[in-house]
Image (cartoon, rainbow, N blue to C red):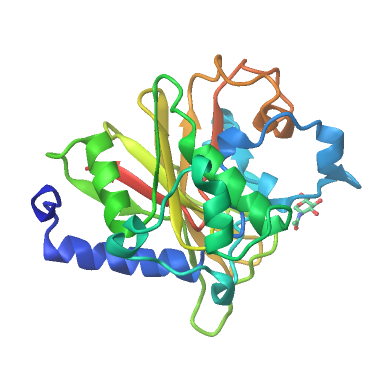
Length: 280
Ligand SMILES: *[C@@H]1O[C@H](CO)[C@@H](O)[C@H](O)[C@H]1NC(C)=O
């Protein structure tokens, strides 16, 4: 097992540090972009604004330039409420499949119709579902299994790097997670010739990472953002999906961006809780 790991000690330290940052700013929003479908935009809006602020994360390819100003919401999770991270050994002792739902609900003493029960069922459903063609998709129930699955997807001989969207404030200030207008204060920096997978936590009694990424047709960018008052900087990671022709025409992104479904690329920022794996 350890031989498949091939991770240097410093890389592990870096990873743990990155994960600590991710945990420290992790997002409430755990639903995958791909799965927010079949929503009518009128349900999303209240007084002309999106009721769910986490929808303020999409943008168009033409926005990718110095000086763009957009309302963006980088949400986070309450640290106290985050479920525990299990070791692989612990996680492997617990079944992880929708077919074992009744056993699991009983095991965690959660009733089927409670919000937690529904979330468990949904998470298992997402994790059991097969990847669509051209996409990597899997769930890791521990950090070790996530890393192994990422390596399996991206190649055992590649150098992996972890990236996250980070909020940076001056020492005397606290981070404000509200919806802000942000300006692109530098030209977005494209990461060329890389492969990318994004992992984020799912609602579950312990930490479960859902990882997915398109095998081709994505462009990844680092974007330096600043709030109007200049007090909060965000080093954001964003992805542009260049080919949306096979997407569900009801995908929420088309509605948020008010564009003809499947007609143009769709870009989005990664929330703070996402672990973005890229090949160097
Ligand atoms: C962003 O700026 C626009 C005007 O350019 C303003 O109408 C809007 O309320 C601002 N949003 C936030 C969250 O400050």
